[in-house]
Amino acid sequence: MLNIPILKQDFMISRKTLLVFYCLQTASILIAAVIRNMRLIQISDMFWDTLPVVIFPMLMSMVLAMEAVQKRDADKTMTFILSTGISPGQIIMTKAVFVGLCVFVLMAFSMLLGSVLCVYDLTGLWNRSTYIVLNLGAMCLQLCVAGWCFFISCAGRKPSLLRYYGLGIGLPLLLYVMYLLQDFVPQLSVLQYVTVFSLFQQEMFASPGISAFLASMVLAVAGLVFFGLGRYVFCSRSERD
Amino acid sequence: MIRFKNLTKRFEDGRGIFDFSFEVEEGEVFGLVGSEGSGKTTALRMLMGFEYPTKGRCAINGKDCVRAAVYLHRMTGYLPDGITLPSVLTGRQFLRSNAEMRGMRNLENLFNMAKRLELNIDRKIGEMTSADVQKTGLVCAMMHNPPVILLDNPFRNLDSRTRSALVDLILEEKEKGKMVILTSNTVDIADLTCDRVGLLDKGNIVYLGDVENMRENMYRSYLIQFGSSRAAMKFAKESFEIKSMKDRNLVVSLQGELLPLVRTLANYHVTSIEPVPLSLEETFVHIYGGVHA
Image 1 (cartoon, chains in turn yellow, brown):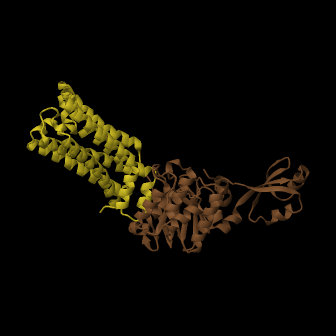
Image 2 (tube, chains in turn yellow, blue):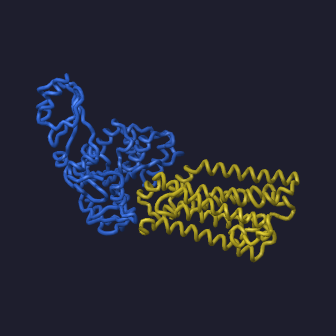
Image 3 (cartoon, one colour):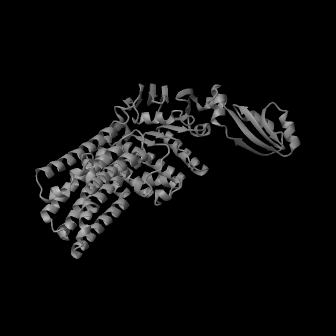
């Protein structure tokens, strides 16, 4: 079902992007370790909510989904790939796996590094188990975001960076800003029902229960559905005319 | 054999191709000539199965281009128009990964083609000139030795030296019995390489025939420089259509064979003679008598 040469080509094309995000992620975990050692607890909450579990993986999936499909459509690399005799379904499946795999490895890598460096006892509220559960929840969130970006990247008969910037990047960022706003401004708490990011709340994972499990499942299933929709619209581009 | 049978593709904006019916035999180079938006690219994309027909069908060796698209892709080399390719890869990385996708083990043909087109494949695509990017696309389209070659505007951005090398390559492929369809914005390119041409205007084929016939019907213009203005004035009284005259330079138009002009010029002191490219609009007017909008 996967095509290894396509996977290799995508890794070659996106190697600099991957390097940048892996460096940023490593740096953020190392900074977390320093904060832990220095007991700068006031910074910690903000840190947990943002960089390593949400922002960097989210930005990486946005860039990778754009590079794997949207940009390859625009520079005609996709046309060359389509004309090699590999089925469109296999091509787009490989690209979906590429995006998903890169984000998964990034999250797994930072989870491992965080566990080794014991960044989980930053606030004194977490232990290794809850830290791993938090990261698994974050993976489900990232699967959802990556799936959405991939779907938008595949949508449309012709490549349009404007559409991708608006829906693929702009919309998730807007939803994330809404999540932050409702978190900081209690009067805006109604916004939590609008944004998907409220399905991933750290407090839920501190003492994981059925609600954390359900929220993670909803995010993971939504992500898989978006990937599936991306595959569907890519394979039926011509039929829609 | 490539066969178009009443093939129509109508897009939402009303553009497309309408009622295409023609065949391309093995060992034949066929040219689709027309301006931007005339339907050249759509015709090739339909052969690749990238567009579904509104009506009619097209087939390669009896296999429907939509139903057997993936199978046909393995025996087809396709160069899309307006390629830019991933700037972070070198030409070698791009071509090698495409060769791997095709399951090619022997890359000799790839390197030979790159050498003939004078392409440095070790340069990054982002640092290549537009001509080198086009050459990379050409190598990618033809490196696997496909029996069917579809080239969308292959001469775009190429200098005259590479054009000549590409003409030789296309004619060699023809000698090997391959079917080649190429598109162009100018008749001159088709004249150099094709056995038959189809002139397109707004998605319709307005002329379909041998290049020889087209040549006979086609007007050509030549800029002739005489040894003196007196000689030029004397020549202007001959029975040729003079498009313009300035000092000892004359632009002469003629239809069909060049021989009568050469015979007449033999009586004059001529210092230079060079062809004046004919615009597509002029070609349309001369060949099918229509007014090209």
